[in-house]
Image (cartoon, rainbow, N blue to C red; front, top):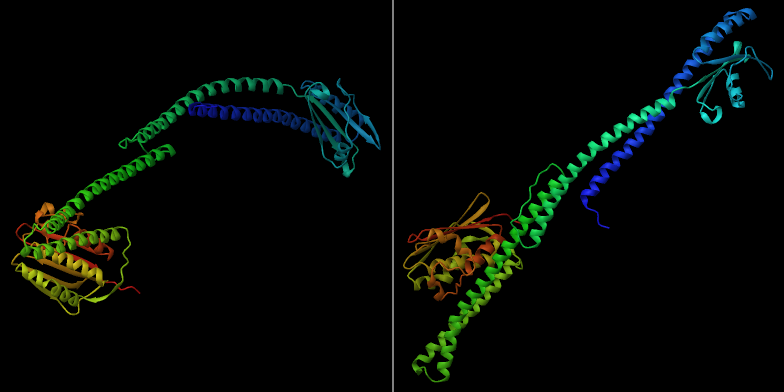
Length: 477
């Protein structure tokens, strides 16, 4: 059976209040009844002690004793208190004055007599079942010299407890009804507020389930519902970020397919055309060698494209494990200078090295060469009849490398875009004979980050480009 949360809250509040009022009423009634009996008992004990004290003062003179008893009888009769003085001789109890009690005989148990012999008063609180009315019976022992010789028995109806309790219950009933009315109104208002807040979250959750990730709910730290709203908003924000990332990845996938298709189409078209020409003898004998050489270059270009893609994916999926060692930076620069000197000369460029012999770097040797060769090739590609400088030094616990050129440069608005996969700052890069397909700088940045380093670039159109790499110099213990 489905019960709305509003009614659950309402019934629970009212139920708790009703139970609380019932418990308080029972406790209060019990307390008042005991208070009335205790008050009457204290009164009887005081009168009994006074009677025994006056009788003892009379010195055992029967006439004076009768006078004391008669005097107390007149006083206590007006207070609806009956008493009788008794004397104990062995097992015989003798009443010294008749008791004006019309109820059933009063019998003391053996334990009551033992208490009297020990000098302790006996108190009996009786209800309607035994004496047809509420009465309080008190027996005060007289023990001169520690010997029990008699005492005084006092009886008084306890009037008013039932009437008092009935009146109190009547007022309690009115109080309960008023309190229930007020509490019902407050419970209704509070339950309604909680339900409205929960329904807001429910509607927002339904909107998110329908694909609307822009929904928000009011949040606060006032209570658990407010914290739930705050957590809900954080969840929606993370879903938004995830959806944006998914959309970005999907766009990148589409762009990747388009770029790869574009990059492969040109060499494949060239290879296909030359092969068809060779097959159909459409290429002159003198041009065949040139055609075969072109096929070889385009094939190598495709292989480089595939290798760079595989390398990029390995780096992105953290499949590359670095083997760091202490490397002399001048040695690395000399190797790069020797490997790329011929390519630089073809474009009229000069490679200059500026580094001290004691400059060291803590890096993976192969990956460091890959980083520097990629950047240097990039500088050679965009520089003609200029200077490429490889500089390095150590500062503040890090090795800093600068690769600068005097080439055409890059527009400032395109500087941050060069790290994107397949991004080309210049369409002429498509025909680059050195294998740069727009993946090189993406791989470079990933490799630098694997070394816990940073890479930045500054450039202006017509003023050259400068790459700055900073790699911490910290040997593993």
